[in-house]
Length: 592
Image (cartoon, rainbow, N blue to C red):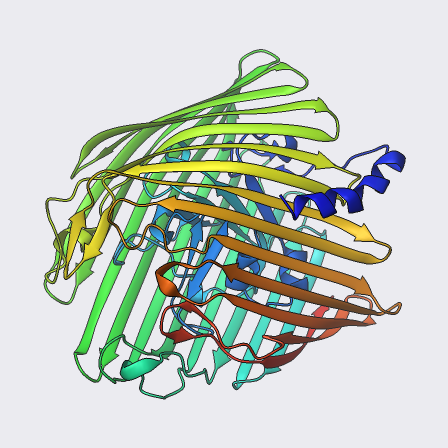
């Protein structure tokens, strides 16, 4: 609570003169339909495009690290394997969507998303939904959901967006985007390239002492057209190719990986009577090939095809029902001769009820049937209460389920075909107080309990008996001191694991701070700091800082310089993998 008090004292003077509050921010992930954030009972944080541009840490992974309840685990620098946990729930308990496409990897060790290949180019917003969300998103949403939206056409006419950056470690990042928007149609296309000579990551006896270079090329696009009869057809898709070197955790060796991924979603929105309908089809494919000097070449391929229907209808003035069904087919293929196909079909419903203009209640229920494990029913209840226009109280409770991945079940070296799904429960309670449109304090207590965790012990996957628990507190706030804008976040996480090594692998305390201020009419300065304390497995505490300058060259043209790891701290976010030292980057952004 030490962080909350100074934030409250700093923001208090604003309260007396504040007469209006900007509570109109809209989020999509918590309730399946666009909802004002102050009407949502679940905890959700939003990272905007402006946040990503202004972030002194310079990547999606590091920008997420500054959000409360988020822990990142990259194995070194750009392009290296990087996963994100939510409130300590590991990455494979977090669903990740890009423009409505599930991008978790069916062929991975666990069905998770590797953020190491995702740059900030072309990203419009990121919503982080916390707590068990299987009632909305099915398996693997035990810890929460990260919902990423690409750049869309938001301005009428034709516009172009370019960015170029070079810096330490032979880094070169380029992007170009164009958007077109008319009365009935919109289209956005983004092309990007990221490349680096890399740094030396792995330490100790297994280290090979070589830099791990990396490059990736990505294209994303989305668009829609609304016909005279009100029917809207749209699509969103992406394709990416990447290549990099990495350090296998084995006796000194060299290794490379090649990957290609692609996804496409097409949808139709139309109204029949009082029902708003959405029909969509998505496809996703990921292929990874590894070539190591000690084990040779091997690879994995995963695919997912999904069909879904969602309907929404108002039940009077105070209630709204969202309902639907979906079916998915996932495949897993490896070079060791394993080929697995599994089918998942589900039905879901969500009822929202507002008994007064100050209270919003939501109940969600989902029944999934998976070909390997049968039926699973999950649910969620949430409530938001606004006793005052500037005060919101939230509470949510949910159940979650995670089915074992094909790798955990059938991999020739350690797979266990007897594994059963993990089951979980979560609860959180939060309060948010606003002091005008840009100042607020928010506190959220959370609790998560999981049964039958799957862990890798010795050389095999096993089912961990008993119950594991995690609880904690998130504090966050923002305010302005004169011309200085400040955001701060603190997360306390306490774990009680049942004989598992992976469940508690997050710091007990994490602290994040960002601040920015205009130095002249055209020059803006920013600083950031991130620290992790009381870390598991005997890992050392860490603290790292960054700084940046933005200079407005002309209208919609900005030059910038960014310093990462300002004090050249030596630290690790994954044991035995050093993070990069001090680095400087310069760049130019132009919109026209």
